[in-house]
Length: 260
Ligand code: IPE
Ligand code: IPE
Ligand code: MG
Image (cartoon, rainbow, N blue to C red):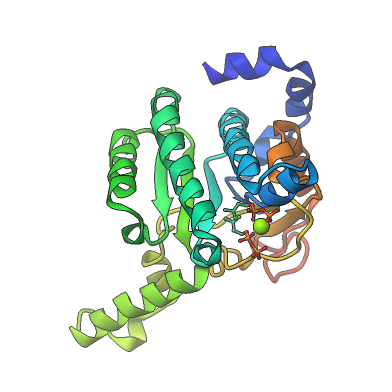
């Protein structure tokens, strides 16, 4: 259904989409949805307006990612540090998230998207937690795009949590210290069983990772744009993927030796 919409409604996007090398589509794309406030302020509007338009952008980018054949899209919606913002902005963001789930969940489900939340969900309101659990349960058997929404997420908090879980297991003698490996740690991250991000996109002209997927991004390719998230279009996603496809990933090796 989305495929039809995508192909017919915007010829320019469709043509650019054809420019992607389909044999090398990144499996996992992570996005820091940044710049909503600046986008609104530049237009003389309240920051909250930017967040509303930013939620629309997410809808469009999820469709595009699904059509392109990306397997996992992780979108950073609210960080553990975003609680430092004024209470009315925080509460608007939480309401937008609830609205997103209410309005989108059936469409996502119809399109075989599996929605997952990463972050400290227990730190959110009970009603939001219920919506999140319902959305996850409804789509749990879907086999298309995995949409990971990072909410109340912090890379440091995620690692601290993993350390605590593993320490507990050591204390209970379920695991020995010698047995702890990279994959043990990975197993206790929110992203367990998912491939690491191949590509990170950060809009809005800032060049930092802001506590996002610290462990997982060890070998991720970074792509930045000045465009603010509310103006970000499928064509920008396509550009990022095309640029990614020109990169040479070496993973610490040297050219063409990865498989030796
Ligand atoms: C991203 O936009 C949304 C969240 C962090 C929740 P911002 O609100 O950070 O927008 P800027 O960076 O201030 O422009
Ligand atoms: C990162 O953006 C978090 C999200 C987009 C959800 P911020 O706007 O919070 O990051 P900083 O404060 O500019 O580093
Ligand atoms: Mg920001």
